[in-house]
Image (cartoon, rainbow, N blue to C red; front, side, top):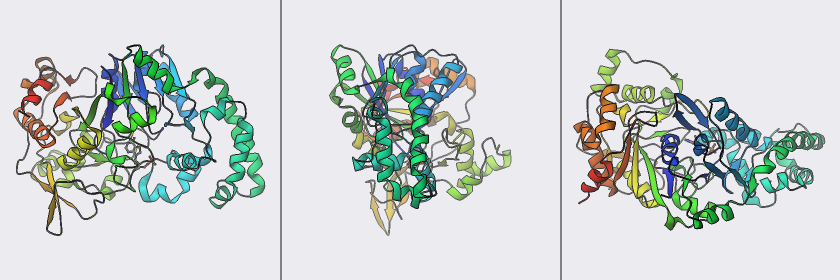
Length: 464
Ligand code: IMP
């Protein structure tokens, strides 16, 4: 099977685990967007590996490719590679990095960290916005082709001269007189990467299309998620790349008709960084003060069950370990949002949902948004600007008792029917509301904690 996997909400849906799972049946695993702003966590053989730019299939020794529209930080690439090897995995497959991919340079990171967007949008400070601006400029961009193509030093000098005003004004360098030295320093660092990277560089468009023509199977791994897409997302609070399934086709130059489209609908949405979040529980300011590992008291849990939504949001954040893999920032948590999911389903042309982290909602009563409301006006569409829109929740409250590890394992073995009734009611309404069935339900971080048996069959039946 060829599949493209994207996130349905604002990222951190647990794509790493699902891509790792699906990778077992794929010859190639390909990253098609974003950069090292992403952090995909995979738990395999009792080891946790966090990858920022290397596709998850690497730990299974698959062929992996980094596409032409990935923003590439060589330092992160090598640290990802080292963490794979250190965790005892062997990267035995081919590694392909597209010559067209844009390089993240030290000044992109400095501009992102110090720039206006960093605070206003809450970026990851990985240089993503500034490198995307340079890509669009077509004259101040530096690609992998430049890095390994021989004229790298001249290219850096030319770009730094062109950016002189910007670099001085933003205090990336103190004075114009320092620019030459700054260019030399960058060259010295990146020339080392150039030697090591040469062996991996090529053309994804050719290699991947040839592989498809030869009957090889492929998994396209999206970073970030639909609502962070630079076109279709909640602008301006988005990233700078195309995160949708259609983006995969455009970015890689492949025919999406050969692919199944799978979107990861985390059981509850989360969001890091700024931006409107209609079903948010509590508020970002309080979430920011929270630390990973804070345990709620029994009294606090009871209050959450009795309707304290701020505490419920905190409980979900702690149980779901909702702290950024890249930045460590606490993630905002919210109630499920069928309005957003319907939109995501439409934008991506989703064939199947995969629901992740549903175990986190065990023991917690919750509702799902079915529409939005503003100034007495109601809509079931996802508005371009979310400002002022409040969620309208469905009448039903979903609830199932806390499940033990044993019960989860039992459900994995027995399949969909063994899941708690309240959970199945939630899944049923998600499916009915979006018109799309579910193929897998993840009930724990490990590869094997995934319910697959009968899931597609039973959820397709909800649509008849
Ligand atoms: P940037 O991609 O670093 O420019 O950040 C832009 C926005 O996208 C910020 O709100 C980030 O928090 C968000 N973002 C970027 N990458 C991810 C991700 O992998 N998961 C979740 N949010 C992300």
